[in-house]
Length: 263
Length: 293
Image 1: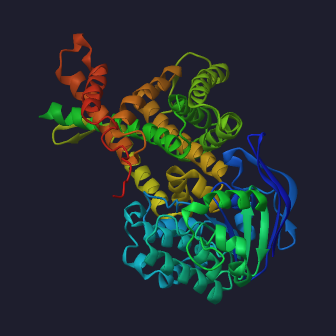
Image 2: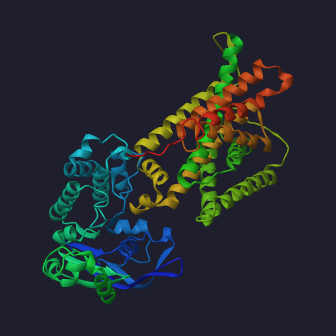
Image 3: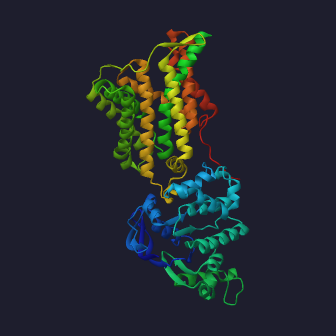
């Protein structure tokens, strides 16, 4: 459904962030993209959704195809119309708009006729939002804002939703609730999901396929169950050593050495 | 008492016109962070376009006014796409300088087409005085108040109900997030400029009718936009409306009650502006950041 072939992204004409990245997302799957800070996960999503331009970044090499069509030359507005919707990191709800209005803004590309039905659908997924539908979004809690951000994505009827760190800054219980809903949306709606996460354990549990990024490249990919057994992943992303115990800080040097080798 | 009512009504009428012009200014500032120094010139263009359609082309005046307003909207959108769009990403100060230059350019163009001598306004609003509570007020002033109210109502509906209006407020809140939902920011800016040109044009038409003539100096009303919007808060639409009314009333009362040889009518709005800014630096209704604790 979505293919990235040898993508190169450069910010401000000098900073090379993605160095020949390739990945593929199959229809109906939840695909996780893992990696440490600064690996280029968010940049990858922005390259797909066309949101690099306001940050002075550009795809300088390679191509991105969605449903067989190249999309890396299109602008953000027309990419949304092809069916890709990015939920940006940090929720980014419109604080001074009510929940209703936020959702309607999400439906900007949709026809007016389906608006009411879609609103009901979102409120069924997130009953908490229905209770507060006339309230300004800026006054919602972090978890509710994340729900609103996901609901806003649903309003656009996308074929692919890209979620950038939905667990950021949320309490563990809320994170679990959000992930349950993400899985439900994937199953009931058939919406394909590309998930960027730092919380590797949660992401690997939810995903059908996972990629691991370092320094602007994919270094590992495969079935999440296999990845969970991979010694390097266990060590660097799940924080466990070979025997399954928590790592001790004494081995940090070792961590650094292995990590350099991995990238 | 009669004098009070008369001053109040003419203050409200002038204030309503200031509000209309300020509204466009706030709209542009909210959606694109551009401080538009050419707002007064948009008003002037609206007035001259009406002069053209009604006086020169001889259209029946309601049709002439509608045509002029539509033309003004087109001019606004054109200014956005030709002048402002290439400036995306440039520092705010450059954009401000460009709008100042734009105001001179527009005045020059209008002067080249219609000359610099004052022209008689087409007389379409009946100017017969009406008695209200013993005070006599020109009918055109009452019409100015009514028309401004109507326009405010329509715009409120537009911002609360229509997709485009909600998208515009979304852009004002968070541009990048709005972009991520497929909202075309360029289009929103063009719409903002078109609406700003329309409200300014309506203000210009009303002013022309009240003055009974039109000349290049009509654009000077644009200067009063600054006390109005800074008073109401740069990013607040209700603020622009109420700020306009306050300035209009202050001007009328200061001109009517204080000794005329002091000429305080022109100064008092700015004095009050300074006083209010001392207490509320972001204006009466300026948006304060929502902070969750």
